[in-house]
Image 1 (cartoon, rainbow, N blue to C red):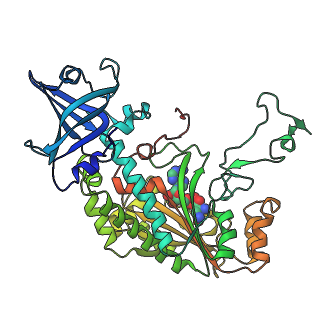
Image 2 (image 1 turned 90 degrees about the horizontal axis):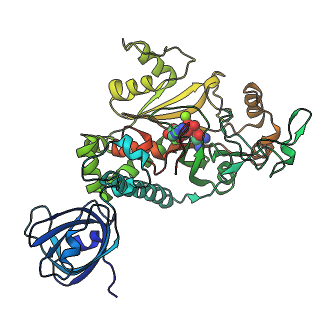
Image 3 (image 1 turned 60 degrees about the horizontal axis):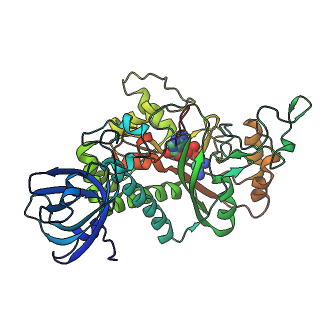
Length: 462
Ligand code: 4AD
Ligand code: MG
């Protein structure tokens, strides 16, 4: 049997001619008395392939019955297309239907469906232009992330998904247990997790940071890239309960070096995706976010602003804007504040550093002032926080003090403290939200539309 050629490869051929086999799903078909035009998509490219089935083809009758969503296998000749908008088409010799799709029932019809509707059929939405393009952009973005770090000699470390320690110290973790929820073993009135699978409480990780620090403090330049889980009840267009995070961790690096790395990294990833997915990006530009390409080009060519939290608060206080949430030194920046800074005030990405220690995680290095920590958030226009990171507290006693202040027990972090006991070094790292990055690249408003199967409060279908 002949080998299948991907539509992307067919359309990239230097010239027409020759017998080809194409397989894919019917997007549309229109028929007249003596010819059928069938648009096929196989996901290798945004573009459909037009197949022309003439009356003389023995499968002409079958072709006339093809409906949107059917899967087909078509052999024929690749010819120059007289029609507009496509270079080549296939003149069918044989048409085989692999799987039918009843037009009375198949939920994806030719019309444009709302994103809300498509979320309810997340198992079928990869067959739309939008989610095909999304999958290809996600793929290119993930590849760019690896290629950036690999080209700089970083080692890719796979950190665990099940963990016993709360990396953010924020308590927003999903428990992993095999205990019987309706009748758990008890001891002294409380559930006895000593009887549980791991013999102690265990959770899905909120971040691979603490574990990847063990490799940074032995192999110097490392990163982890995996799924992370947060049991926070945030029903926003930027929060998922399960999302992917990229976390580089660098030994012998301070906050300035980390901010430079983050800037180079984002620019590299944006450049790569623009260069490798031009059609998909143009599609998002046309249908979802006018100006997306100019926006990305602008960021690639701009220098990220650097501001301290204290300076940012001053700018917000002087802005004359009315915000929903108050602005005051010591309070966390809300997304409306972040967006004012990056969109209105500065007009490009901003790296905000040196936040008050009370609003940041326990592992961030305390500044000389005793009030702020070496934290860094990268804010991007249209999104707000896309990266969160810091220089780490590498001094044992200072870290123990921060943990005491945060009300954390030392016991589960004994191994993390060991990194400060033995051969400690200055080091720094950050976390990039993968879905927020894809949102930024595509201009998609809702984070539920940039991941295959979104998990959010009260929602985990599929
Ligand atoms: O700022 P966060 O919480 O930082 C950390 O977890 C650090 N341990 C990272 C590190 O230093 N290695 O999260 C990092 C990024 C955020 O900037 C945001 O882009 C994304 O992860 N993020 C989320 N994305 C989607 N849904 C959520 N619920 C998210 N929470 C954070
Ligand atoms: Mg953060």
